[in-house]
Structure formats: structure tokens, C-alpha cells
Amino acid sequence: MIRIGRLTDYGIVLMSYMAAEPERLYNAAEVASGAHLPAPTVSKLLRVLAREGLLVSHRGAKGGYSLARSPADISVAGIVRALEGPIALTTCNTDLPGECEHEPRCPVRRHWRSINQAVRQALEGVTLADTALTAVHPPRPSRPLDRRRARPQGYGRPAAETAAVAASVEARANLDRG
Image (cartoon, rainbow, N blue to C red; front, side):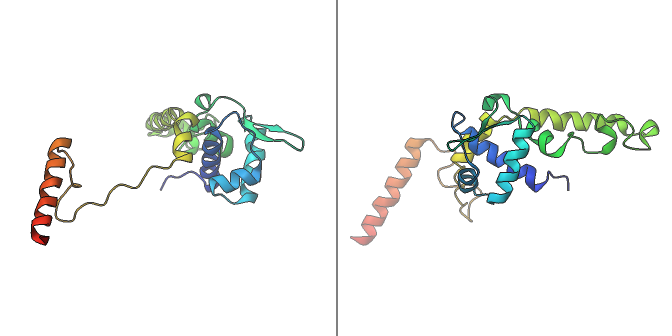
């Protein structure tokens, strides 16, 4: 399985939380509580993200952290790079020549470059502006499917037809009761 580390996942979550109100200052305890993350981990991540230039640290009694740039100007790729290093699925494609001893004669090197480029572009294409809304307002769970049917009730029907079917069902229920 290819996956980012837990700290990077948490970093993206806390940055998304902060991006919901980008003009505010946040302290570590507030971010930890709001993003539902462990406070010591949040403190560590805030320091690292500030050192990497994604956050600005404000000192003083009313201090805290704020985004260094607009949420639209901070990509998920930038957060991953700040917390994980270069984005690459294999060591031979990290833009650091010599990481792999087989690099000069590797028959699949060119293909890994294409794959790594696609992954980087996908991560660059998602910004904190995209993730901010879902951080504060998570998507609602989908309705469970009716086991007898392959789709939820009312799916694919015009609203008027759905209302008519509902009225018909209610009328039958009233006849049965009365």
C-alpha cells in the first residue's frame, strides 16, 4: 500500500481546519480541539509547518498561528513536501540523483517518472481552499440503499413523480387504517 504518514495526514487536516477561517489566529489547543487531533502532535506540526513557511507564528499573549498564504495558494502537495520531503513513489525519482544504485540502468525509470509526475500533479491540484469547507462541514453520510433495490428511493425520478408516489403510499396507508 502506498500511503502518506500519519503526521502528514494530520498536517493536512489541521491546515484545512485553519483554512476555513484563514484570517484568524489559532493556538495549538484550539486547533487540536477543533480538528479532533492530539494536542502534542498539533503543537509539533504547527512548529514544523511554520518553519517550512506554510504558517506564520505570532508571539505574545494573543499570539498563535495563521496561514502564510491564501488557502487557494497552498496545495496539498506543498504540505506533503513540507512534512514528508520530495513527492516520489520510488527513491530513484526524488530529484536527488544517486539515491538508488540502479538508477542509471533501470528499465522502468522513465515510467516511474511519469507516475510520480501524475501523483504530484494530482496533489498540486487540490488546495486548502478546496479542503477547508469539508474540514468544518464534513459531508453527510449517504442514505443507506434499500436492500431490494439497487438504488435509493426516489433516485432518478422527477421530483413531481416522487411526490406523487409518496402521496399514493400515504393515501393507501390512510385507507388501511380507516
